[in-house]
Structures are given as structure tokens and as C-alpha cells.
Image 1: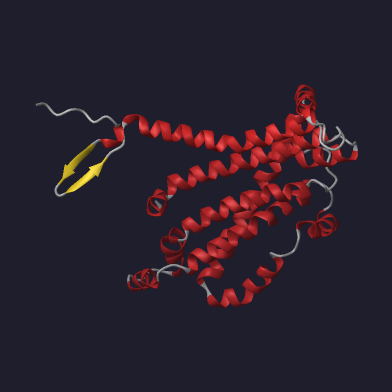
Image 2 (image 1 turned 135 degrees about the vertical axis):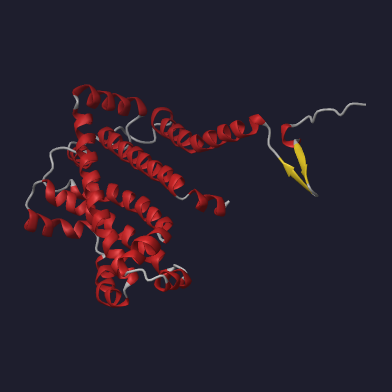
Length: 285
């Protein structure tokens, strides 16, 4: 009798010596991906459903407390059609991009210095760790006094927010490097700069990319505080303007926009992390 084909795609296997290697069917990966997407969309769908039930059906909130979905959607369309929404988004994107880039440019060399030098660690790290705990709003009046009311204080505040997560993670990554790797570099006569760029920083790359993701999130958080500084555009300004004009529908549009932009930024950095250090994901699996 001929051998019958397996009924389930997950039952496919082949012999490799004394081991049986199981292989999923062609459709298993697609089905897993669909299930993952459905699971990810479930919570937002539930939240939207609760929003609709409490405002449009049960009327538990007035429009000034929590506007219904149709009112919020109408406010979003109004902002888009007038062009105000695009101007706010572009202004915030520009500030976050500049501030995040400055935060990276300051954090990487600082972390490399502190992580690779005990003297630098004793001198710099205590002060930086203390400054890390200063709330974002505490910087605002001083930045206004020092830098004026133009774009520079806004970008600087965002850079401060992005700096510390990147700095802390890169220092932690450098501190966890196997000392034997450093010994090998010293034996081969590497200079201090060569050790830094060929051993310390590559070995700390997973920590650095995690720091970049956290730093990007902090940049979006600090954006709202930054746009308190004499702003006339930006998503943070849109939030404050909606509050001042008793427009919670506009405030919700701003909150959702910040959430989506932050998520897109994090997804892009996760994709970068996956491509640069895919071996880390394989080890975690």
C-alpha cells in the first residue's frame, strides 16, 4: 500500500539521522501572522467599542467630558481640510527628529567615555544620573531664560529627554562586555580608539538599540512639554489649544496622533534592530 499524505500540515516531518525534524505547512506562517494581527487589533477595537457605548449609547459623559466618536471624527476632518493638522504634525516631526538626533550625538560619546574609563565614570556618571531624575517641566523656565523662545529651547528639551535612556543603556552594554574580548584586543596591540570602535561599541549594540527605542519614546513625551514654550504649531500646542478652548475632541485627535506617531517610530526602530542584530532575536527564541 502507498503511504498516505499527512492530514495536517503540522504533521510534516523528515528523518535526520535519529532525529525527527518537524516542519510547519505552507499556510501555518500565514495563519499565525493573521492571528497575531487580529490579537493586536483586539484591544483598540474594545476601547473604541467602550468609547461608543459610554458616549453614544449610555450617555455616561457629556460632550465636554468625552466627546462621541462622530464629533471627534468631524473635528479631525476639519483639521485636515484646513491644513492645520498637517502643519502641526510636520512641526512636531521636525522637532522630534532634530532633538532625537542631538540626543544620540551627545549620548553615544558620553556613554562610550563613561563605560570604558573608570575615571570618567567616577567624575561624570553621578552628576548625569542625578540630572536624569529632573522632571521635564523643570527645564522649561531655564531653557526660556538661556535660549529664548524660538526653536532651540524646544529641540534642546527633546534632546535632553532622548539623551538619558540612550546613555544609560549604552553604558550598561559596555559594562557587560566579556573582559576576555578586551584582553584579546590588548594582546593584539589595539589602541584605545580601536578597542572602542571594534570591541566596545559593537558588543554594546543590542543595548544601544534598546536605548534608541526608549529614547525615541521619551522624545515624543518631552515634545508636549517642549511645545509649551511659546509655540503656535505642533501636536503639543494642539493639545493645549484644545484645552484652552474647551475642545476635548481636538485634544483626543492630538493624543491619538501622538500615540500613532510614537508607535510608528518604535516599529521603525524595531525593524532596524531586527536587521542589525538578528542573532539577538534568534537567541531569545
